Image 1 (cartoon, rainbow, N blue to C red):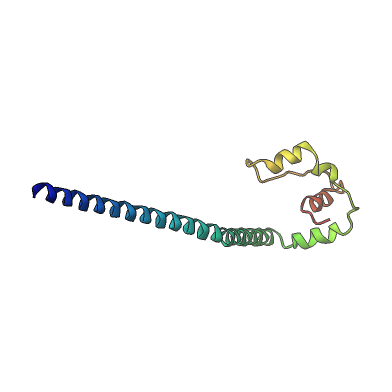
Image 2 (cartoon, rainbow, N blue to C red; image 1 turned 45 degrees about the horizontal axis):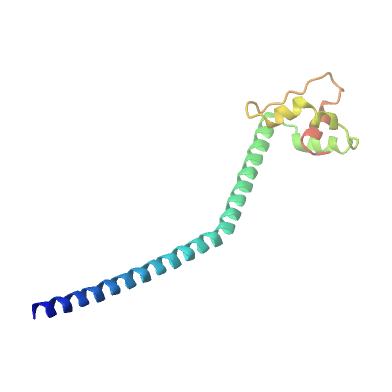
Length: 138
């Protein structure tokens, strides 16, 4: 009788272990599906997040440009950008290309050390024309 009771208990225990194993496998399958679904949702959000980041960068650039114009207006009564645009209309196409490709200018442009590019020369030597080239106005 004890042997038959033990056999029944062992059989019941095996059944219970099989049920537990089956349930564990089911939980793992659900977790795997959940991970895949989560990954897909995150991947779907990547595009909108990148668009928001791009828009934020554009707004930041716009604010920086506005602040730059405000500073120029504060420094001088002469409307600098308007003056440069008017002058740029008279610049011959291709003027100043030598400066844009010069090693000194390229080094300055990629450097994080200084934001000032000193352009000097006598009156009438073409500083304003070169500045309009540098600003991309011509």
